[in-house]
Amino acid sequence: MPDVTKTDVKTGAQDPVGGAPAVAALEAKPEKARSLWGDAWADLRRSWIFIVSSVLIFILLLITFFPGWFTSAEPILGDLSKHYLQKPKLGDIGSADWLGYDQQGRSVYARVIYGTRASIAVGFGTTLLVTLLGSLVGMIAGYFGGVVDSVLSRLTDVFFGIPFLLGTMVVLNSFPDRTTWIVIGALGLFGWTQISRVMRGAVITTKQADYVQAAKALGAGTPRIMFRHILPNTLAPVIVVATISLGVYIAAEATLSFLGLGLSGVSWGNDISDGGNQIRVAQWIMLYPSIMLSITVLAFIMLGEAVRNALDPKMR
Amino acid sequence: MGRYVARRLLQMIPVFIGTTLLIFLMVYALPGDPVRGLFGDKAGSPQVIAALRHQYGLDQPILVQYWHYMRDMILHADFGTQIASGRPVTDVLGDAFPVTLRLASLAFVIEVVVGIGLGIMAGMRAGRLTDNVVLLISLLLISVPVFVLGFILKVVFAFQLNWLPPNVNDSTNYNELLMPAIVLAAASLAYVTRLTRTSVAENLRADYIRTAIAKGLPKRRVVGVHLMRNSLIPVITYLGTDIGALMGGAVVTEGLFNIQGIGLTIYQSIVRREGTTLVGLVTILVLIYLVANLLVDLLYAVLDPRIRYA
Image (cartoon, rainbow over all chains, first blue to last red; front, side, top):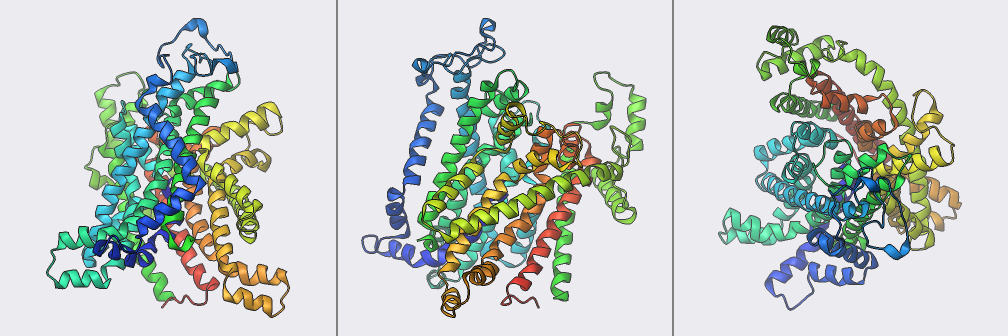
């Protein structure tokens, strides 16, 4: 599934060329020329895509951390007298029976609200894991080159060659009780390759810059060159890929849940899967989690889009 | 050119070995047992289980199993036996592969025609209404997960309008395959559209296009020949890598529409923990992916005369 961001890598990887002088200037005298980040921020504030997606993501985060603010109903409390009860009335917005009840008489609205946490946690957790792991491998491969690079690049190819969904399915199938950590681990295991490739490309370009040679000549140690000098210039493309992959991993988690291999517990994917089996009697069970899921993925993809437009000098 | 192809083929070998080994290790190192699975809820006598394990070679160390498996596969094109049915994996593959191939080809055609078409439309009118509408559609297609889109199409076109059958009974009937193919193509289609759009919009500003217009060439020729040849290079890269994704990504679509293809077979073998079937199928997918990538790189040289492979 993260294949989809492959195309962004191409444009992203070339960023540091354009961004290098700006960031170098920032390190020397921050008050002079506006940095790549300053430019990007100015761009972002003007972009309607960024504003819309930030508002959506802010609301989603509120729901994640304080589901009790949005509903007083319990997501796992079933009242069989309300089996398949549907009472869509506009006046009832936010009440437990607003979006109807499922087969067990559980409030669909409460399940939609409480299901948010699973998606958001997996999305952020996986992106964090993938970014750290991918950056580390990419940095080492790009910086040291030679045999280290060959070995790590082939390793990346191996993990990249296995279809993403299939790999995670094989791993997750071995765990009967799938916690958030296990799902994050499985997605991360097959997801880091893309960031690693982007990072490696960016490091190889940046490594040859004059200021890196200068730092080396001044006797800076390897970790210092890596993290103080090279890393800041490779961040832009990595951030672009990472932002887009937030949405991709949320969709991937729901897809795994749909296949019966995702998180155990309340999640949109599980509800969509359940609702899919009752699609002819009660479409609403599937409809509302689907809408929430699509809006969430859309919000993160839009955010990624806005960030890429702001960070990629070619898009200006 | 010949040397380049040879080098690429040689580079494929470690990736091929690594990928198959990784799948093999994952299937066998993680808990679960396909032989016990044959007995369902019953315990099964230890002797029978031991005999079956021996028959399928499951009592040997993993690396030995891997070695035997690869030896048989490469020397005799023998992919092992599907434990649940007792059929050779090559037979199972022979049944499932054409089905997935038909589905993926139909999806690929939809993706290419609609995706590139919309992309050119948007790219030629960059920044205007058409462009924004196409951008919105493509964002929506990327955001709505495959299975949600599948359900929506099912409810609307199969249950409400009765235009198309909800499930596929006969996979040779392209009418029945149409809806699953659209679902399978949707996300890739959006990416093709966006790539084409960016590429076309960028190249429209290039000097050689201005020259072509200044020479007085008809618009049809400028767009159809000069613009397309350069704009489609990144699109073709994406399409090449997408062939593999379409074949492997069909797990959800095939499950949704009950299509007996590779995706569904893979799903079943994962759930049943059938190492041999799974490794066989994934090996085929990995090979398709590697070969498609090589072909795309070679196609570059045809499209872009600046690229030469020594």
